[in-house]
Length: 141
Image (cartoon, rainbow, N blue to C red; front, top):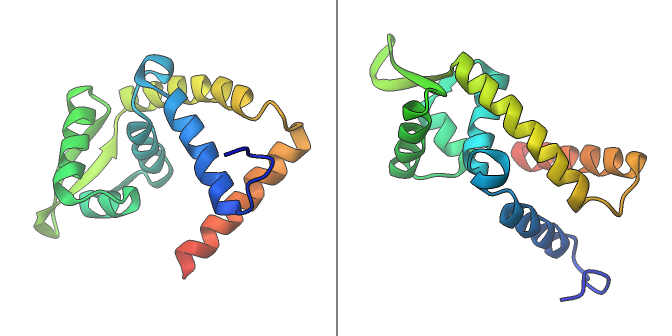
């Protein structure tokens, strides 16, 4: 499909997402994109329940555990039992995880520059703001 003739915004967003996902490999950014998103969420929220992280990432509980096992083995996160409910786990990002996230984000910025090369600075800023606004609206619904 030619992006210039695509009719739907969702179609264009899906295509753009695929381009980013294909290019943002572990070799390029130093971790998988899903790991980066999880670490980004943990940095912004200091800690969260394992179940809530899985819901945010749209992962079933088993796949969330597998992702957290990888992040834990790399030293990027720590899991602790919730003192209020011992059945739940609290997940926190470590200093090593913060460093790895910063490195990956820097590499992702370079990739973003390549993918969004057709947009100037104000257009990129506007795109970011519009996508954040749309995402915020979809979470409220």
